[in-house]
Length: 377
Image (cartoon, rainbow, N blue to C red; front, side, top):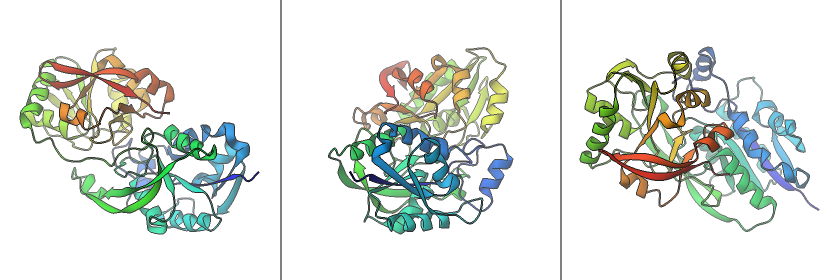
């Protein structure tokens, strides 16, 4: 029986700047800066979450990949049959390594290319593949605007599982999007479409292209802001990223980090654009209920954790407690999800499950709706 030939490429530094507030890994020297600030690379962990789904089928597939942290180490550690076809030259890999690895794997006639990274990785792969070959992304970057990624790492594994077990999977074309990280770090979102690639389309598992922009109905946002501001007493309030939460800061007349995490106390700024480590130092000694987190969802996708807010790590979220998380969104934004659930993709499967269920979402002043939150597998 012929084995399913799975191509695997991991961008080891994808998303490495997220937890230390660098907003990504692009740019000369950024990975080194992130490591110096205490960041840890998580792309291989995210890839392993996807591959673990395929363990029952490891005798039915062979993984063609690149050396060490670009794929071989992750796949081999799980016991898969691995053939390393590409070897990077330096310890710190680059976009060129990704592109060369793609060409090498395609030459071996793989069935699909599975890759772990962010929008920059998708761009690198699109440059080599175009729309001529099926690919699927494991989300591991800070910013995931592209539609070529599964909603979670495990969801990526589920899609490959369908293919390995010879179930019918529709191929469709999805946009590859990316933003200018230099502008992103200054709080400016400038997204651009760079092309499209073929992906196996299973709507339960594939994310939508991120919808950008602020709600046009300022009255609704004012009502949401008024509700949250009224709750601010003696607790610390962590304000997550996004245009909806930014409106709360605007109503308070405070400096805001649109694409970062800020902390308030008694309606005044404690610190802007905090790293994961700084957040942990601030909340570690506080009692339950003394810290509240205000977050919103990514428009068009539904993610509340795991996209653009890696500063909110599993230990941060656990310390805050589910009961102290306040999700804010307009009803228009929720309706645009077309009944799809909100998504928690924290990187901690047990935490994702603990967060799952119906969540109260603040949609106006003294107005809430119950909306499902889950972590698709």
